[in-house]
Length: 210
Image 1 (cartoon, rainbow, N blue to C red):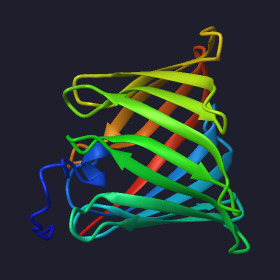
Image 2: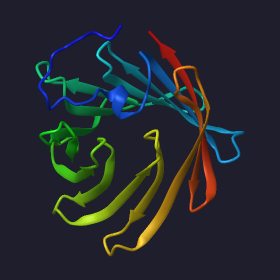
Image 3: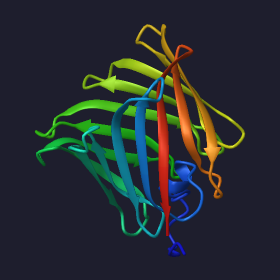
Image 4: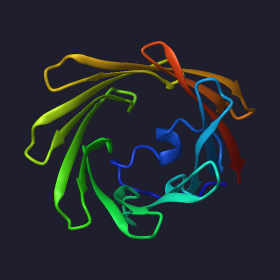
């Protein structure tokens, strides 16, 4: 069973809930194949603690060589994510991301720093009443917008479309997702990604439960 913690009202949802993962997920492995689904491009592994929050994230090459590692740090009293440290394969720090929240516990701002602790990108997000991110604005170190992404969801909360715009508000890409092969807990195990209606990748999931 997931451990019960009494956080402040601002801690609305765990990482499992934000990622629309149902049940007591312990480990999530995702294998990303090319658009035809016959060539593995990379693999990722996410581990979750007993409160439903993600503790780390690893990426691997098709040959199973480590590419990167991310460590998630949480506030003990609120349960909210404080920062993410992303490391290269050799263990050196690549990026540190710090997090800011609104009164509802939505992650509204992510500030990204290089290994010298110099800010190089800020992402600001807006959310709907269900806690789904609807808009993300990415700005450079000078606060100038260079990418805007709009999100669309189905009735089950799955992200089904992303529209990316440049700084001139011109549409760059439309990414859409199809989900299938759901397990007994209601989690999808196969997702096809399309860029401008062309299939670009197939993601296969392996889910380990507590």
